[in-house]
Image (cartoon, rainbow, N blue to C red; front, side, top):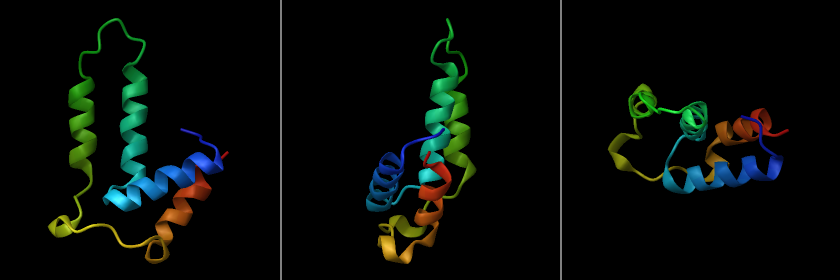
Length: 82
């Protein structure tokens, strides 16, 4: 999914605040979009469940590190901005 630089930064900031992987959020959005215009959305929950299981959650439920401690956020923004 391609986003504007501003959208990518906003998503990265929100994900950082809530300890969620921006890449996983994009995968979830892509999966929902894939099923969006189908007459029957059979399998969408299974697809979402697989994405959620695919990457281990943050250890101990700790909040994410600050933006300055997360160079992957900068990479995410660069890769997903148009």
